[in-house]
Amino acid sequence: MFFSLTKLPSQGVPFEGTIVDDWKFNYSSHDTHCMVCNDQADMTGKLFAGSLTFDCRIMHYIIVRILLPRSFNLAQASEEDLILMWAFDTGRQIDWAYLVRYRMHKALRVNAPLPYPQLVTLFLHHFQIPLNDEPFVQVKRSFAIGVGVVTSFGYRITT
Image (cartoon, rainbow, N blue to C red):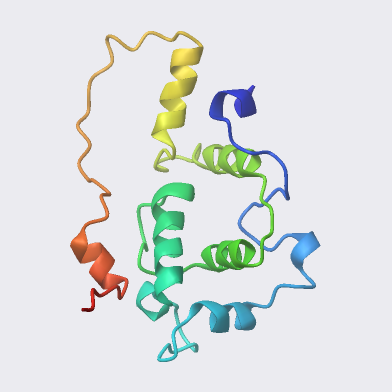
């Protein structure tokens, strides 16, 4: 039912944020750092988005804002982010339906931010749960990718 409602692909490995057994022999954290970082990156400390190549900055932005939304450390690439970037770059398949369900289940912790509000609304509508009396809450932040964000990726128009 989850798959039919969300239309998320459910083939591939069940990724839960850490390296999957099927990938252990091919994945190297150091090699992944070299693959995603620009030449000036300091690879001894925390990995910030500014150290990523242009393509990887965009990929990281999509990961932390859309695929695995989070509300903190948006400028720092986590190990989970690196594994996903490596998986994308090497053509690994991920069971997205499983990953979204897993992330939603993790959000059941106390005070955890609710991920994927559009999916939650879709489920509520599907099960015909009345929402007429629910208070409307204006979204406080927008995630439009503006000129400033794109410029921060290192993208420049040249003539």
